Amino acid sequence: MNFFSSANSNFTRRHALQMLGAVAAAAALDAGKLALAAPITNISPAEDAFLDELERRGCQFFWEQASTKTGQVRDRAAAEGKESRSAASIAATGFGLSALCIADLHGYIPANAIRERVLVTLRYHLEKLPHEHGFFYHFSDIESGKRLFHCEVSSIDTAIFLCGVLTCRAYFTGEREESQIRDLATKLYERVEWPWMLNNGATFDMGWHPESGFLNARWAQYSELMMLYLLGIGSPTHPVPPWTWQNFSRPYIDYAGFHYISGNAPLFIHQYSHAWFDFRRQRDKFADYFANSILATRAHKAFCLSYKKMYSDDYWGITASDSQHGYTAWGGPPVLRPIDGTVVPCAAGGSLPFLPRDCLRTLMAMKEKYAQAWGRYGFCDAFHPEAQWYDPDVLGIDQGISVLMAENLRSGFLWNTFMKNPEARDAMTRAGFQAT
Image (tube, rainbow, N blue to C red):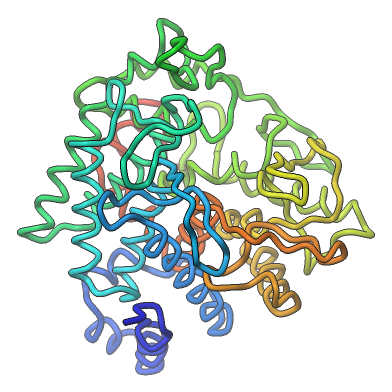
């Protein structure tokens, strides 16, 4: 059975209910799910249909490209689905756990199948997958769990995984197997020894190798690191001090009249922590980080459009991704790699809540104009039409940020769900966040 046919989506049903009026819809839809999915912006039916299709296909990736035995999700897969490569990534699995909650919200997959998959995933990661002080290796074999590529135990990728774990804990609130989900999720989070990853320093280390010890690199400058620090500060068992929040630098960039905090890095640094932690209408003594991500996205679009022969309002957005010449950390401003006209859909996809009209316009236009870029799992990872190059792969983390941010734009679901975790709220309070 194909769980992902349009007939199995709640999209048509939901729009029919909208026509009956808000009161009738609230009575007809599940009250608990509706409470987690209050609209946050005006989206047209055509735009919502596009976002629903993007999410449905993205969730299909996380369902089909995960092991039924371990729950681990492949780091990448062929855009049309058939895949034999065995490398899973702990970050893709974290995005996948969050995507399963979205799939359940919209009815893309039968509820019992989703709960069984979540249980398998959490149990395997708690009881069988190798770890160090609760932190996981970046890459592992999807079936055996064996470490691959001599990779590191990764602090940031473990944080992404734990965000997915805690999303499941907050979402599955029923009895029986859902109580098991909550128990396993709590044990995974509370097992992590966050002070160990500080490595006797003031900022988190990026990782650890069994052969050589800690990496000579730290999460010491603003980036996707915010989730890592907040998870550590909020830990009820092995926390790091709240003052660690002040220890990473927050340099500013000025470009085309935009003044905002950013490293010289790809756009995704302004997206990942925002997929789960709700920084809207919140600020610490340094910044309003949601407003900062809006500025970063606006600056990035302006940067792309400065290449007038390559990009337009209907075609823009680059971030770390595949390219014709291998994996590339595209970025700007300032430019990180030579720009050749490649576009990376998850650049706009991951910024949907920050710049909805602009991001929706380019994503919908790309789907309409470049049929080869849209397949079984939605957009391929990157493409360059003038060079007649369309990536044959999709990447788990790039699919993930697009799926999660699309749903946050539509309903705020990930934010509303994840922030039900008291540790997340407490961490932001301890870090000095206040409502604006």
